[in-house]
Length: 280
Ligand SMILES: NC(=O)c1ccc[n+]([C@@H]2O[C@H](COP(=O)([O-])OP(=O)(O)OC[C@H]3O[C@@H](n4cnc5c(N)ncnc54)[C@H](OP(=O)(O)O)[C@@H]3O)[C@@H](O)[C@H]2O)c1
Image (cartoon, rainbow, N blue to C red; front, side, top):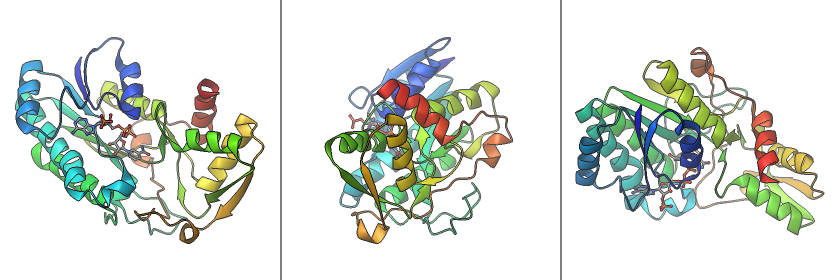
């Protein structure tokens, strides 16, 4: 298959590329080579390349900075996927797009997890612009997958790397203990994307994180346990750790729909153990 990958220097892109490079013809483009906000450039590249799939790994992911950069976030997270969907439709390619739990308000009872059909209601600029991206994709093509993920880590700046660094430098760290979600290894998400394409599962939105739920506090405990780091972890509340963009209390996404398609989804503990084997 011929696959065009955008945002090729990003964290998820690196895993997607390594997962799909054998047996496929990959055309990997970074922001300088293909700016997804430039509709003319996108249409011209897609027409010329005529790919079977476009995998959009490009995004404006600086959640806090986005609060003061609405226009840029909207261009990259909404207009960009819209341009790709428009171009994909012209050549009958399938668009794979990646979205986020931030399309929800995060206020769901933590005993429950969000389904794909649950009402959206983003409360941050990042979440609003990512939701607009989903809407633009759905408006411009029927042949799309939208994989909503959360708490992603891999080959790039991420929570695990930050905590490993802090754990070695400090005697104590404070970590939020009232936000619930699923840490997701980029390799496992890349595998979900590859399996979905290979199995040709029905088009649509899929919640796509590792299995199981935890909190940032418990996640940190597991990181330090596996990495054998001796550092005191103090649980704090979201109110004690205010950030420019409000963080969801509940980021838990139900994977029932994906599991019904027989897609393999490892647990977050399993993903973390494999990641740390490479990272340490
Ligand atoms: N990271 C998470 O925790 C998380 C959670 C939920 C969902 N997601 C979603 O998962 C996807 C992948 O995230 P990630 O963490 O891999 O992101 P990332 O590492 O920040 O990578 C995003 C890439 O997009 C590129 N980019 C930015 N603007 C562009 C443009 N106009 N045209 C082309 N490329 C552009 C960036 O290039 P430059 O660096 O050169 O700007 C960067 O390489 C995104 O859709 C994100 O919203 C991530």
